Amino acid sequence: MKKFLYAGALLLCCTATYADVAHADPADTISWGFSFNGFFDSVSNSFLPEEVISGSFKGHDLDSDGLLEKDELLSLVIGELDYIACAATSNANYQCGATSFSFSQDAGLSFSVGSYGQDPEGWVGGGRLITTGDQHYAYDFKPNVTTERHLYWTSDTQLTMMSQAPEPHAWAMLVAGLLGVGWRARRPGR
Image 1 (tube, helix red, strand yellow):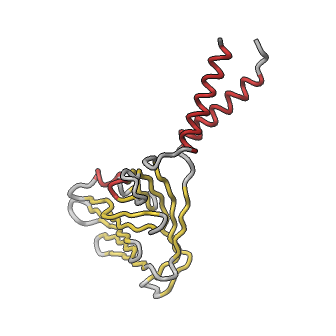
Image 2 (cartoon, rainbow, N blue to C red):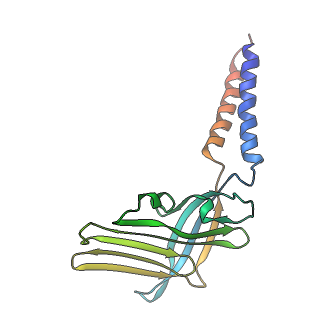
Image 3 (spheres, rainbow, N blue to C red):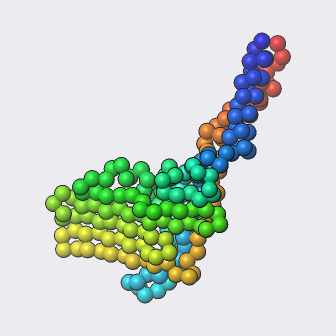
């Protein structure tokens, strides 16, 4: 009976992993990483090939049209900020979110995101606005000091897309199944 239960549990883990990874439904999670390389810096008046804006996004193509749009996103991380999650924390002194997003393998990636905030008195603050194909604008201010940075997309700006690996739970089920098979194979028969 124990052998039957062990075999059933292993079969269940392997089947769930196979179904999750190999037979992904169009409504399942779409997960990509991206990197834009090379921008024109207006301050130095030069193209910076090593300048990078990178991130990742996840979502569900709910209408199965092959186009992932803003209302279908679960996350949109650029740098260390998730512009989908941060929208819930917006208030009178802090605003954050994505105003547009579109991705398909045929049409490519485009988005516009922003975040800005300041202390209640308005003495210290800063923000960031990124619009693909246009610019990345960042600023910070303190009493008597303001810094700004303008990076512009050019025809030399390169986009690299990286399809993300299956979700961690799929790998966990696969590892659990393989460990179970290995453990079972080492045990003497009873």
